[in-house]
Image 1 (spheres, rainbow, N blue to C red):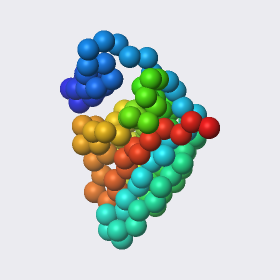
Image 2 (cartoon, one colour):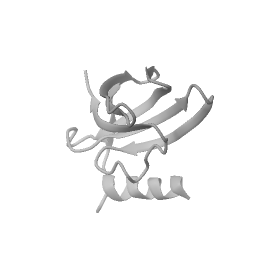
Image 3 (tube, rainbow, N blue to C red):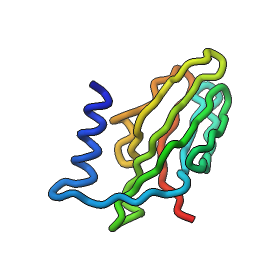
Image 4 (cartoon, helix red, strand yellow):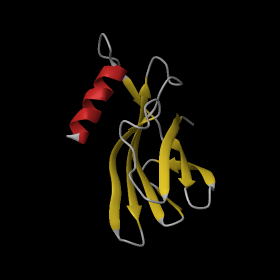
Length: 119
């Protein structure tokens, strides 16, 4: 159900009246928060790469943006793995303008998308 709602939201946000073309970026800027220590860090993650923050590993599969306005929004396909529990904590699309729509549900960490990085 959550994936269906996220996919529907992607369609409504990306194309309110008509379909818009999306561009793909080679990297994304993510922000991670350790809710226990209060530490935040910005992670520049390349597509296909994995970055570690505390006990989680974040893998970026894709970062897309509206082709006609690259600075307006970002849609990132992420997998977040809790290393200590050896489980996937999140696997799906996150939207920069609506982080609560499809969010990481972890007791200690938060991760959200800031923007795509076009080099």
